[in-house]
Length: 365
Image 1 (cartoon, rainbow, N blue to C red):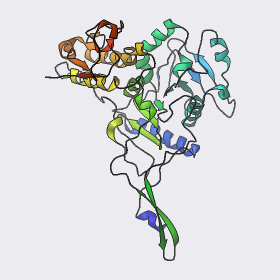
Image 2: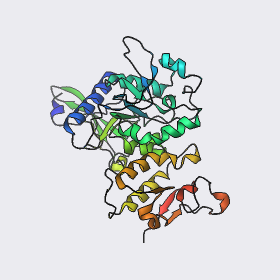
Image 3: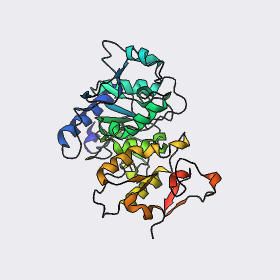
Image 4: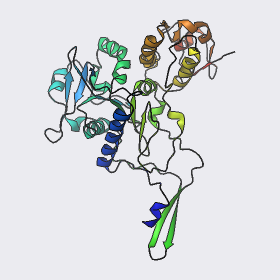
């Protein structure tokens, strides 16, 4: 089309053409690993999590299986970040572990997990970490142990697949049409070239997607800790790593708002810097999100806290830090909530914001 030279932007990639989605995602990963060696870790020979889903080769066997790793096992893997949306139809339990190590029928998995397996194969990865299948769901001891390792699970993943558009595990993300955007269609008659169509976006500003995953509490630390994010948004796949933010397929006309910025990209290791401001901003952002289990208030940021303990060499106290403890006591609820003993949880002392379920705001005089 002669007009293509003048009009560079193209419709969003969407998810209808799976091979193109897989090839685009694989090229983003390869480019990052080759070009961003100073900012993005390769994660090629890392300690493997306790359990992984072995996606195998679809041409040999369509089904998957659970791999239980041994101490000292190394390799590489992808991780999944997604909305449960209720009870999980397939999950790891003490009674099912042996059978899952032999075979998990792909057709029995909910759509989001099926799509994640296909995508993992499409980008050339052998292993996928999924919390429902890799943490024993009826073992409090295993849950506690794996939650404490969550920071390293996401930090060590080659890429985190973020199923952002799906509000439940049954919905999936591949094959779905992009959500309609405000667009004008203009038929243009060109002499000697026939009739052509121009699509004119009526968006007045940067696009601000409202994906269900962005409202979930656990996802904040998953997106922060991951060195590379493949975001399967409502419109199209989005790439985000420590060196490149919000990359889309070549020519996409959407310019994404910066609200997805990894929070924060860099933490100060020097305790003289205002670390309490960064932590306060994280808490404010986190407490506006939803948690299915309210008692996970501290667990859902435990991975970030563990990461910061290594950077700051500081003591973490029920959602506050010792070096800026006094500043972090200056919090209030938004909107104002009852501060009586009946309105608090025993999961944290009353001086901690984590003792309440409300959104939190910090006051910095």
